[in-house]
Image (cartoon, rainbow, N blue to C red):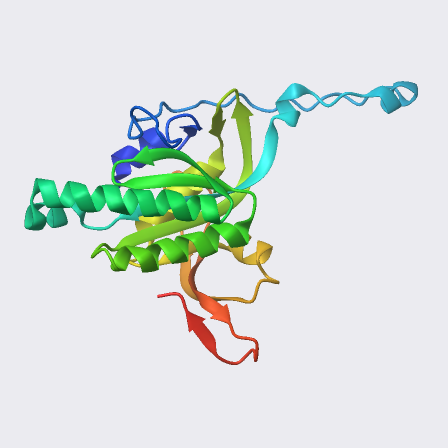
Length: 232
């Protein structure tokens, strides 16, 4: 289970090398990445613009969707099952989560406590992956919650960072067990995918400006456009 302290300390930067399959310590805690502000270049003279080169600080930025997955009540489950049984379930669950992340075109970035963080090039892929993981987890006797947000991030060597990670970390904490909670940005990006969302109100996210409308993923519309396929 992620705590506010973990989120404050870990949401800002993700080391993509920490969570690759076969890593020696996949649950290593990543350091916070403090990003330098992007410098906006002065316009080049008209005659020189055809040869203008994008600054490295801008070229490093790209759009991504992040998925945060967290196991609910992991401490209680560990006490109920005992160390050996709980560790065996954890290993099976983590193998499944990594498999689904790969299947939906994502990349595991890091492990946070009892959860994982992944990035995707497709917002729809991230949402479907979160819903699939939530459903598959129940077959193992585990409840998970997921948060999905899309935004620009910045690459520094092998690391990724940006506000997008802070938002995703806030969303996963607010999600109910078995729920995939997404930002309005995500709903707009997947507007043509036939997804169905339920409103979860407007909230202030700790440390972030403004109010954020949040939505829960409910499933996908069937071909007739009338019935809903439940994701839960």
